[in-house]
Length: 520
Image (tube, rainbow, N blue to C red; front, side):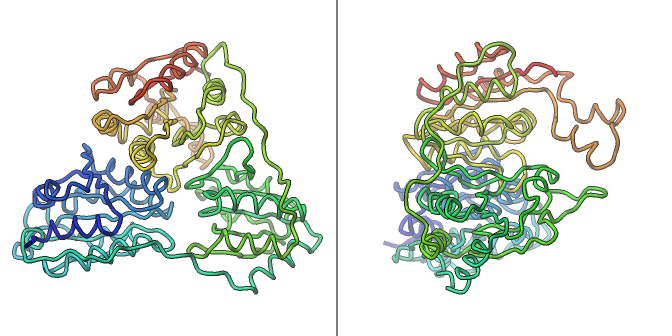
């Protein structure tokens, strides 16, 4: 059977294990859209904004462990997707990012023409333009292989319209399998052993593939139990397995001064699939590098290495006992009463979080208490905003629900961040996904009020404060959600919020609970 380029592309993606495509298509992608009827194995998920498509592909990859495809239209569509592709890049999520381009015969200074490869390189580890239908299959398979890594990355395949409609094109038939991480050299293991046995204060800092692996977390915990080292995790893990019975490394703080306090006195810092701690921003008269003076940094594993295997080898080399390892016991906070605050929202979540839940955390300042309140909840997965580009939570929850079918998804979402990609609620409703979105509505870009002072700009007058205020008029997230087809409830006290959250978790399909937080 003869295929055009678009049909060959989709068939190759499916043969390579990529069977979900989050799309906001345009004219350049119409043959791809038409080809979806020819390849029933590909699930097309329509999004109303390209930033939802890219964020959903990130959330999907973190839970499924394999890529989804995105489909966006020309440079402006890619531009709309860039913020969440940035988050995916920082999370090392495998994403196959397909960008429709003008036909190769139509490369004039026309409307929507732009430098797509330059834009793509900012957020992609692999960028390629397919220039002939006969090469579509091979190029698509190469894109999947590049996305899988290791480490995972965004692989952008640019598909001109005439390559999409042209033929003949044949799909690549060989499936693409994930590759194992590189084996860590014995010398690095030996250096870590020496550091941890030095008798000087030490810490083990983990991230990446380690925090996503319960066995690796247990290896880290037994290493620290054997040596007395501190067990630490990066501030915003892409995926963190946690809950009762799972070792809980102490996450580094967001504020640089908190990290300085956490690491004070440490003389040996062993890095495992993460980077040395640095401040998120530069501040007047404050350090950017947060490693203490006199502390030696030892790299056990870098991204792309078999970090869980390296930890297991380190544990064996230290003679670490396999059991028991320190881990939180089963515990839940009491159902909260009184004022509705970030703390009481966290208590309600801890009281009700179902076993196997996926928490997508973009709660910003008001989510400070949520990790502590849920540490003894039944085992669950926690996903953070790795790249700091807000508008991640609602799309990532969409993708996570498709990537982990049967698992309830809870999205903790700050009010300001929600406004970036609120359109994702419509796709959640259309797909009938079990996502509970909790909007923590404090009517403010609260984190920026804090940063205004931290950067040395002063407290700010009325004009400055107005730029960080989300009232006048107040946002009604319940009305917005209902307009997108998601049932919604508003809560103004702890008891009402807990009841609304309990009901939302118990009912199938998407729900939104707007927590209007008390002033203060």
